[in-house]
Image (cartoon, rainbow, N blue to C red; front, side):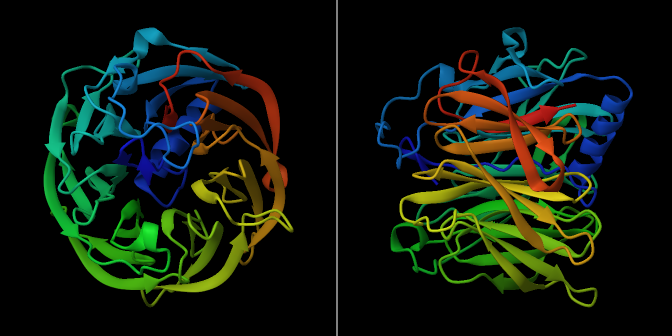
Length: 403
């Protein structure tokens, strides 16, 4: 996704029982139930979005854009900057992932302008500890990472002409990283020529079954990989999305055999059924993010998250339509029912759940905002009235909660 002279994206690890990241989240929810009333959110910049009329592409990267900022979110949705926990990571942190690996709390930072990923251990007070260690991205423009089974980190490189790939890393002591494999993706569907002339890998969803679903926006394809014990990725097949979908990110239902894919370009959520006999996916439903009667022109989807219990799903839309769409998920068949559309801060790209799914946090990239919503039953949201415009990086787009 074009941002400030670079190509960027983000995916925040979903709160799912079906993934290792989900296990970390569920443990966090348990601590919250035991009395934890707040959490630390790390916020990274992805620079400005080229589709934002206020963006001036090609401007030099500022010092503030290289800092991962820290914010404390409380149970009432209030947001407090924690500058003592912020850290200069020496590059543009287009994506941040927080997870516990082998008993150590880690922050993994995809540095867009360095073409690498930085692993940082967190101190007992949740301060990222420099210098950390970095590993090459294995491609161009790293925009995503998520922790998978067996101390493995998976990543996506968006690429430009070339350089798009799905990658895997070994996670060592102290959150150190070693590149295990990079699988290039080639060619674009060209349905939307200015976005799909080439492959653009945007996110990879790991599962506890040892599979990984890699979304390639440029190819209109979801790659299905098997994660081997040595950290290598073995392709199992490819699933074509509807033409011009532009698959960006995906989440997995914690109990039902369904994967939900966010289409950035067509602004929809695809519900896929996962067969017990095959790792490939079968399209079961297409759900639009557009309000009734609204035009799709000039907007694009940003992020997708699911509640830990699989009861609701939320997706953001940005640019002309700056909204969060909530869906209720049928407990029997996993299908979606649109529940609500709520206004969001301008260019709501970054989005994550906090405090066991009680709150939804949304980053407005255009005007440097962070806003909280209370999660209600049935896919609904209510603004808490709390927002933050200071103590954030310019153009915040990347969010990771350390529970």
